[in-house]
Image 1: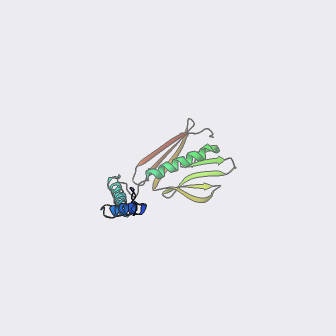
Image 2 (image 1 turned 120 degrees about the vertical axis):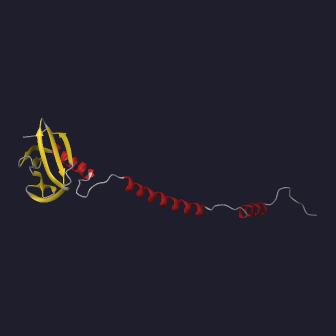
Image 3 (image 1 turned 135 degrees about the vertical axis):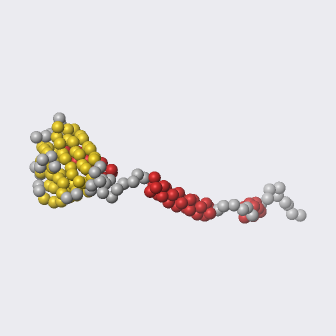
Length: 163
């Protein structure tokens, strides 16, 4: 006489669970990851294409707006650390003396604005510049740059040390 258990054995229980999942049809994790990768590639590519078509037209001879912003911020940072600031060369150059006693000069060289320290070096700061003027008035430094395509850019910020 054999005794049968009311509860199925754990082996029979696992077998029925496994066979139930094997017969199901659906997406595996690998399928989902592959589809997500393709979707992300297409979405990223389309964003770049839309950016190209929707961005403003900019001439090659124009100053890039981000470059102008970086240039103005760099000059502002230099002015904050300067002990003495003055416009030189008929307002076409900016000279300042920093805390190390070095003379920092921003000036136009051909179609760029360059930075020189103690009359040495040539660090291009901004390109495509037709002319630039630096004015110090009422404790404020005003910079005006005109691009090769005749577009004018302005920046003004307060200064606390000037000659």
